[in-house]
Image (cartoon, rainbow over all chains, first blue to last red; front, side, top):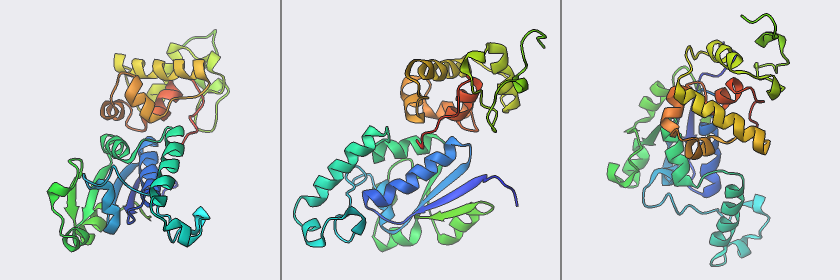
Amino acid sequence: MSDTIEKVSIIISKGSLEGVYPGLIMANGARMEGIEANIFFTFFGMEAINSKHYEHLKVATVGNPGLHIPTMVGGLPGMSSFVTHQMEKQIAKLDIPPVPEFIQLIADSGAKLYACKASVDMFGLKRDDFIDELEDIITVGEFYQIASGGQIIFT
Amino acid sequence: MSTTLPGYHELELDAEGFLQKPEQWNEELAVQIAHESGIPELTDKHWQVVRFMRDRFLTTGNAPSIRTLGKESGVAIKELYQLFPKGPAKLAAKIGGIPKPHGCI
């Protein structure tokens, strides 16, 4: 086995802000190292490539113990927007782009973006619901073919 | 090959071949580093990115992120990756004789 990673295929399965960013950062980081990168968006992870939603991703303030906000408080109206706003400020401070710009950056870097066919069918979505940068809607089997010879990372 | 100046591999380098002392850099070195990094010829566009990277590091103490490179170097992201397929920020830093950028972005 080679001691360097030549290719990664990253699965993004969650649609919250904190669910989407790690996979995007890893994909971008791979391209910056000259590593080939694919991203496979599945289930709610498809929010990150949904042209109507991807500007409005929110931090999950309920069921997210790492935030240290009591569940009942996290459920108060406006809480998610408030925490999202705080996190977006932190993200901007680190020169990390907002999700739409980040997706564009990653696509321009040559990474390929794919949506999961089963999820697309399940949610009743169409190609038009997604951003232009989406390469294709593919099956799990096709994903494994594309990922072949590289590392698979599930987020 | 110059006989008066020390060669690239005689300089202080990190494990990946990044110069540790930016002041030891010169254009001939840049050409050699590029060559050894898989870029056979440095075009004007390459130089534009390399100089932007180096100048920004020397004035601010930090190497610019790929986002900043795409926005401010005058070369867009797509073309940056065509010019430097093995990583624009990393390679432009290496060729420009500055330490490897440490940011995740």
